Image 1 (cartoon, rainbow, N blue to C red):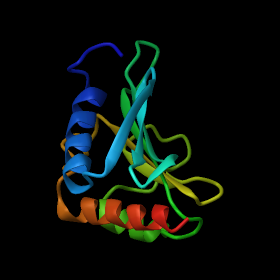
Image 2 (image 1 turned 60 degrees about the horizontal axis):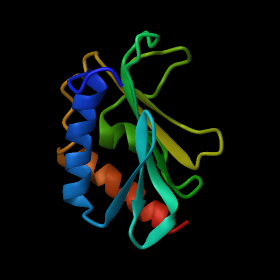
Image 3 (image 1 turned 135 degrees about the horizontal axis):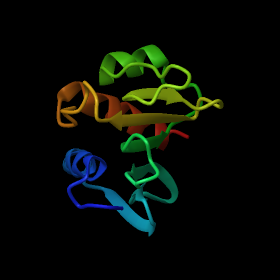
Length: 140
């Protein structure tokens, strides 16, 4: 990681503050070089989220990527878009967006320096979205 003040680092600080406030039962594992994993205290052996902060000089677009595990097919793309107010990723796109993995058991959120630069992780609809993933993850 280049700078403590990089775009991904600033976005991560806002993200983790909102998540830790809403979900005080999380544990953070900083075992990865470019990010960390989030576990629930009651399910310590299964990762709920993985966060990567990419801002190396080789990275064309500095970004914060949040991967959230859910129960397969439990949350629809339409619901994610409504609750997060983030657009569905288009092929080849390097902008703030989201997508479901091929197995539809994980959601990826990408935050870049674009019109979503000032994204508010503390707004109710985003926290409602995260709560839905929390409930879904716990029901796996």
